[in-house]
Structure formats: structure tokens, C-alpha cells
Amino acid sequence: MTQAVLILAHKDFDQVLELARQLKSKFDIYIHFDVKMNLSSEEKKKLKKEGIKYISNFDIKWGSWSIVKATIDLIEYALKDKSIDYFHLISGQDWPVGRISDIYEYFEENKMNIYIDSEDAYDVRKSGEPIIWWMKYYFPYDRLNRRSLFGKVFHRVNILFQTMIGVNKLKKLDVDFKIYSGSQWFDLPRYAIEYALEYLNENKELKKVLSTSFCSDEFWIPTILRNNKDFTKNIVKNNHRFIKWEKKNGSYPAILDESDYIDIISSGAFFVRKIDSNGYSKKLVKKLIKN
Image (cartoon, rainbow, N blue to C red):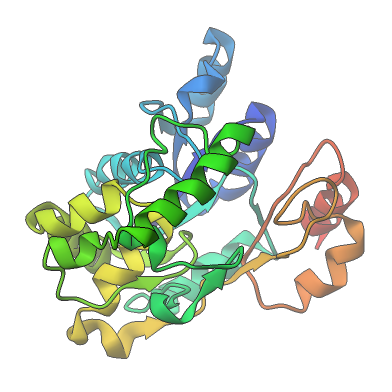
């Protein structure tokens, strides 16, 4: 069995390259670099020398459909290698915990399991909003910077306006499946990831809902896989990621540092994020590598 790690990267080429080097002893590596990184010829040579496969097709904007498009492109690229049976999606700001061989062996022994963090979207609120609104309403974040001041104001006004006039694209498009949400990071066997792509391509209503939603990267995999009753017995609602959902070191979620080490190694996680290996996380990374 061959396993692949798929990495979505948007900055810090050297950190992403070192992350790939750490993992490639056991995993095939596929990276999507945000086009804004504009890889130099020297950086491309380094990737080729390490045998790391990569693409750079999308200008990714936070909260937009472009994240899913980049993820799908990366999945489809990796699926061309028929020997790969298992796929892990991480970010360029992740770092492995423990021995790489132990991570690999865990999934060898549990190769039919689907590891996703997911829950009923109707039960979740974030930033004071029921996140089902993010699927019911229309959001233009492929064209508008959600994180700009204008984007933040627009988001609130847009939701208020669509609530007042009763917009519900789930009803309009006659969506008859349950909506689930969760972390975009996953560990999936080939059969599950192929099913997800096939389902999305065949169900135009779902694709239209997702492509006009906010943070659709947190909805598409959980919604598709959890609506398939045949997968229920194989779904484990644990994606083995350590993420600290608080503001720390100038970031939300937190950029992790040495003070998080004990919590990380006792968490059972296989990957942690966010990591800034040349800044706040420098000592932490050294400890994780040593560990």
C-alpha cells in the first residue's frame, strides 16, 4: 500500500520544502502552491531534486470556493498514480508528530477507515453565526477579500440582507441531503475520495451550493461522505490534528510554540498546525523532530 500526503501551501516555501522532506521517507508528496507564491526557478529545481510533485493552478482566497478547487486538482493529480491507496490532506503550516513510520503504519493497519472531523451543521455556531447560513446564502469570496475591512463589513451586511429577504438556496435548489461541516483536513482511503469526487461531479445542485458558499472547504467532504450510509461503519470522527482554537502569537487559530509541546505529544495527534518554523515555532519544531 502506498500513501500520499497532499499539501496546500500558501507561503514559506522553505518550511513547506522541509515538511515534505520530513514526510517523503514513507509518503508520496503532492503540493499545491498558491499562485501568489510565484515559485522561482531555483525553488522548482529543489522540488525536482527531492522528487516532490507539485502544481500551482489557483489564486486561493480565504473562505472561497478556490480552496476546494485547488484541493480537487491536487487529489486528481495524485489519483493518477493507481498504487496510492490512502490520502492525507494537510496544510503547509502543519508538522508531523512522532515518527513518520509510526504515522504510516497506523493507517496501514486502519486502511479502510475514513478519518474526518464532522458534525451536523445545523448545531454549530462560529463567530456568532449559525454556520448553516454559510450554505443557505450567497457569498462572492472568490472575487472579494473576506479578510479586508471592506470584506468584514460586507459579510455582516450581506448576511443581514439575505436573512431579511428570506434567501435559502438549499430550498431553491431542492437540496434533500443533510449538511455536515468540520475540518477540511482529512485522512481518506481511495474508495472514499473517489466517491466524493464522483458524487460532486454528478450532483450539480450540491456543487452550485458549495461554489457560492462561505468556507465550503469545511462542508464538501463531510456532507458527501456522511450522507452515504454504506460508509457509516468506517467513519471515525477524529482527523488526528492538533489545532489550538485561540488567538496566540498574532494568529487565530494559534501559531504553536514550545509551551504547547506537552499538550501536543499527549494529544494523540499525527499533525499539528499552525507552525512558523523560523519564528514562534522554531524551538517546538526542533523538539518535534527530536521526538
